[in-house]
Image 1 (cartoon, helix red, strand yellow):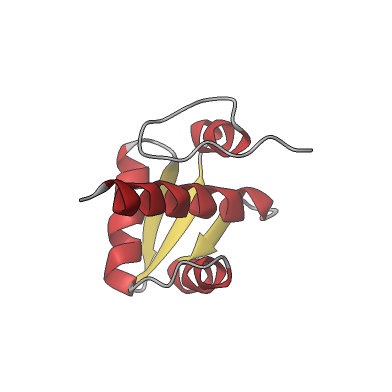
Image 2: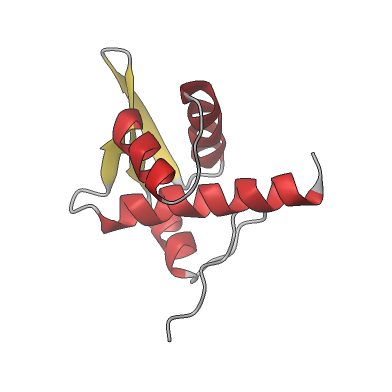
Length: 99
């Protein structure tokens, strides 16, 4: 994977965390996440999204639950810290400071 692909991947991971952080229950299913990512400039396949969700879960940034074949992701407290910039995880882009 080249440097550009790594940068895009890190940005996409941050985008997932930020979308989950905006939800009142800190969770969304994979279809909502794909649409949210698409609106943020990341058009990804279901397989690619599931791979990234698995990686985020391995880092304890989200928890996933398979409900009737649909993956649901829920932000963890550690994931919220990464989304807000309070913690740093290699492979996830740091959020930009607010103006």
